Amino acid sequence: DNAGRSELETRLRHLAPAELLLPQLGDTGPETALSKATHKCLDAYQLTALDAEGKQMSVRRELAPRALFASKSARACVAAFIAQHCPQGQASEGQEPPPAQDMDQLPEACLGALAALVKHLEIFGLERVLATNARTLHDSACNPNRLLNLEPFHSIAHVRLTAQSIRDLELFANLEDGKEAGSL
Image (cartoon, rainbow, N blue to C red; front, top):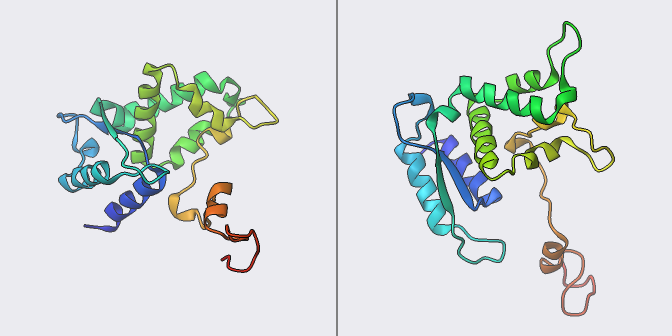
């Protein structure tokens, strides 16, 4: 395939989603259609997905209306979400609100996926979990500049390991006697 498909496979393995939210088949427009190769990649992921313990994982495939993924409706959906969950993100006179600026920086595919995710979570009353990204431990007020604070996958130049992983990999001490000798 191409680099985009390889990137998708890598992201799926890193994120290990238990549910895939995909556009329904339909006639809303080619910009929201998934190729056969992409469907094949997703099928392969569903068959081989492993959980954190290395056990076969069941991956749900949920279909959302293709219109949600389209750029115009996606932009409106995300803007409404920001307005609802970050009301203090309103612009001062003559200025565009920060969230709209952030939205312009998102690729259309990301904006469509975010809109579909918002609508999907609204069904279960869980959409507010997306707004927690805009809050900090020290301040419960929503910061609209952080709401869409998404990092490009390729910009992540380090690996974050849990304490259990560090222990299991014997990075600083071996498991046998807890000493540095024999560790990585």
